[in-house]
Image 1 (cartoon, rainbow, N blue to C red):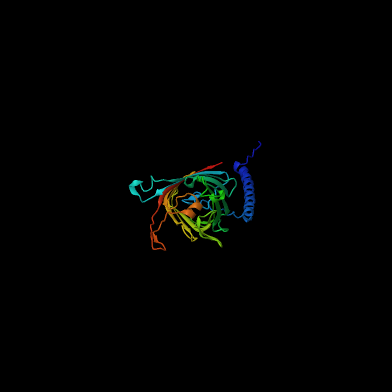
Image 2: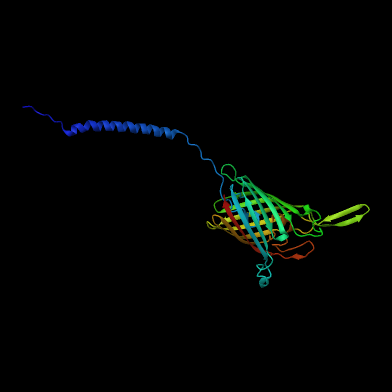
Length: 325
């Protein structure tokens, strides 16, 4: 009788388990070596990016901000200034008084450049403007943003006998500024801008006319230097307190332009900026405001001892709508 010897199943399974464990250990070693190699490879440092949204829009009340929208942005502005307050019920403190309105459009044909044109009711004033972002605030590179803004305005008021504008170029004024801005944190931003306004013609009169010649007294200078300061403090994601102050620096022989103090609120959405405020500027053009503002925020006594009344403010609003193409 022959015996059949049968090996237990456990003895057959044991070699298979040993081979599997060796394979897994070898694979784990290979993966560990690959991981160590990857960890030793240096990672490229992240490139610093410019800060975003130093201000929510291109305007802050009467001043341009440092912001230049991205390439392909089209913007439309509606700007409104009511009459000066002080007459009470007669014109509802300027709300029903003669107002000034400006309509404007801007477009960014390339990055960092913004071109625009506008038309204002006062003086039937056309203006063309350009803004260029020179430097953008970037951590480790630049603590501030720097932008240039320039505007050329043309007065189209009817002048049949050419008494106000003997030459066509007499209608032209210009404005230039360099804007320095810094976003300190997510809520607070501040900018400062030295400005230069120029008028091609000034009023004057003869103080001497005789055989030796003539002398003309010019009531104003052709160039007016100034300083513009503006700030924003966000009180929520879509609401901010905004202020700006514009101070003429050039002392004119006569007809000195008054400074501008303005403050209000800004409300923003993804495509709209709405600002509601009160201030002294009413002419809706930077050069004309700098040169010809007659609304005085502060009362003072002039060189002749005459008291000049202050508090000549007006309500206003700005609406900006952006589209990206």
